[in-house]
Length: 504
Image 1 (spheres, rainbow, N blue to C red):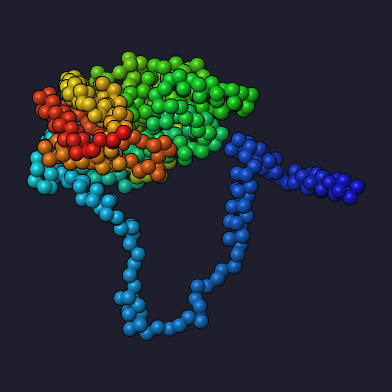
Image 2: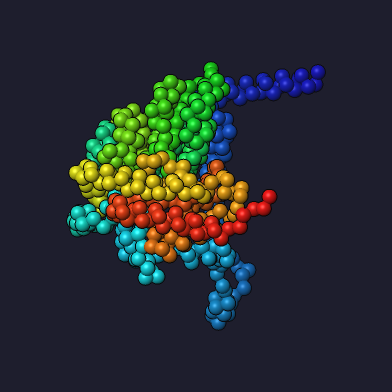
């Protein structure tokens, strides 16, 4: 009976407190906020209450002085001696031998990173390690436009876009992007990396659902994690698995309160060079009622007959994609990024996109550079024909290699080369990255600059395959591109000849 009486007493006390609380003016608003905030999350409300009480205590606390009377007085000489003896900790940890050796091997380009460059060693090489695929870097027309913009607007915006950082050139660039992609509106960000990682959390919140490709880049991964949404992954570019995940989400959340739901993927995958199956993704998007966020950072300017990306490549209206996100720092050789879509999508980000609201606006001359690059792309469609021809010429040679294969799409100028599984089973390759770096070094020694795909494993959700990363450019002729491919093929064979076979 004592326990029962205690429960009765507690219930009556709670009811009495609730009745008294309801009489307080504004209490209904507080209760409504607690019930509706963040999908009715009580822990969130409790944390906010703790922060509120801490703030009240902090401001009501009595002031205190930092002055102490019990410290030891030092003479000027003693102070100087202590200062001379003090050794500050290094800002970063010193590199070990392996990391230092890798840093020492990084080639340094003297001058503009064009299709043919001179290294600090004095060696001239063909450059297949740059996103300068359309050879716009150093273009005289773009250079003159940038200089003119600097003279008119200065070198920086000196403030966030929503405050006083927006200039006329920014508005014009946003219009140019909209016209180029054939969508109603667009918004530009100051940093390419922050564009997708700001766009996603501007729309997706706690309780919402994101279904993402397992091979998306780290910038997209960060945006998804920041959103605190429920994340479901599907196997890379596997449309059957995507539908399986969408159906599973439908079954798991059936009958629950309606939430926002997004499919997130890349157009041209940076870590693989393959292209997403956009028609099938759109079919599933409409079937299961999702919104699509498509990152075209690597595909804008290189995929499609006139470089308009995946929608043009598949002959699909760009308005079918809810949000097209891209970089202005790759093929356009400028800086920053953009998000294109409907007027609602764009205007919402002007007040909710962290990278837009809290960062200084993109320097005007970079915005002008992007506009001029798009103008050249529209007036010179033949550069895309040349880029595709060079890509296929390169692939025709490297696809015949015995030791490596390319998972990249045949039309992708971003090419990855990966060791065959049979090679890994038959050869004693203890460190794939070291093997690939030896290939890179051999290529440089023979006049071709390529790179291996480098990531920070601790920052990746899923492991990323070790590959060679090659970017085709229109700055080289078809014959020069074929020569570069032959050098890569020979370098792989030479390095592989030094690797012993595994004895079974």
